[in-house]
Image (cartoon, rainbow, N blue to C red; front, side, top):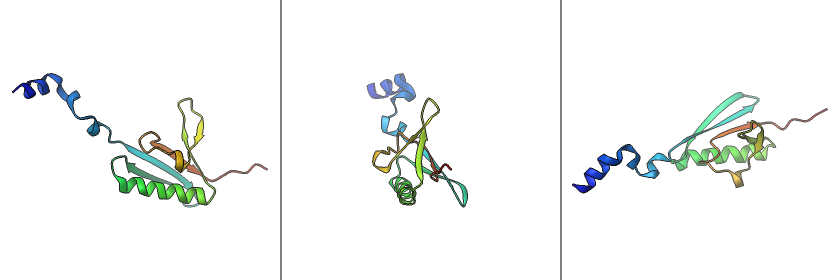
Length: 99
């Protein structure tokens, strides 16, 4: 009875933290096929692995993976430093050469 009272008193905030951590991330890929969007669920290892494979492909072909920072600038993200829970919006673009 005390547990039920405590749950009622705390309300929805008493939901375990693990349940609240589920997020969806998005990777936008610009290439010769156009703009393709891939998503992942931070709690689904299969979808995270799929994004990791896209990362590998992008890096192997010289494309850049970056994210937009809070000040609006871009920051390159590498697979070794990528955090699926932290970096939830990624952009993949070909390297541009000036001329």
